[in-house]
Length: 250
Image (cartoon, rainbow, N blue to C red; front, side):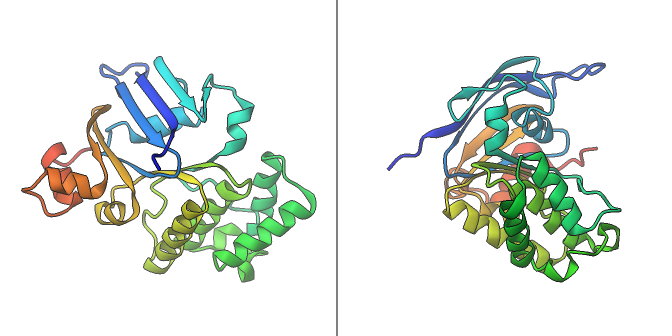
C-alpha cells in the first residue's frame, strides 16, 4: 500500500534580513505519512530554517506548506495540536525540576489533571528519569537533558514529530534509548522529520532522505536507493561528502 503525503512543501523561500542569499531557495519536498524522514545537509544548508517554517516558528517569504491537508498560515491552532517539536538547543527551565518542566509544557499543550500526570509518569519511566523527577534540571547530565527535552515534545501525542539533532553530544546509552523509542513511536503511526549530522545514524534510522545544500534539494530517496544510485559510494556518509564537498562549513 502506497503512503499518502502528510507534508507538501512547494517553492518555499526564506531570506533573512541583511543576507545576500536565500537560506531556503525554492525548496520542494514531499514527506509521506509514516515516514522517518531525514532532512540532511551541511552547516548552513537550510535544515533548521526549513524545520522552523514547518513549525510556524518563522514565516517564509514565499511558497506554500501543506500539513495534513491544511495550508500553514503561521497561526494554525489545529496544526499545532498535531505537531511536536524537539529543537536542537535544549529548551528546558534549568531551575525547575524535571516534573515541573513537564507540567509546564503539558499545560502549554492544553493537558492537565490525571491525563498529564499519567503521561509524565509514563515518559519518566520510559526514559529512565523516574528517580530524577524531583531534581533540578541544572543538575542533569547532557544525556538526561536530551531525554527530558524529547519528552516535552511527546506529551500531547503528536501525529508529526520534528527533531533537530536529537542525539547530538550525548552518551551512547542515552542515544540508544532515544532512537529505539523513536522507532517504536514510528511503528505506532507517528511521522518523524529528523535532521542530523550523524550519517551512520541517519542511514540506519531513516526510511527516506533528502539532502539539501544552499537551500535546495540535491538528492532524495531511501538510503538503499541512494547507495544503489551512487555506485562509487559505500554508504550515506560517502554520498553526502560526494554531493556537498569536503570543505569545512562555518
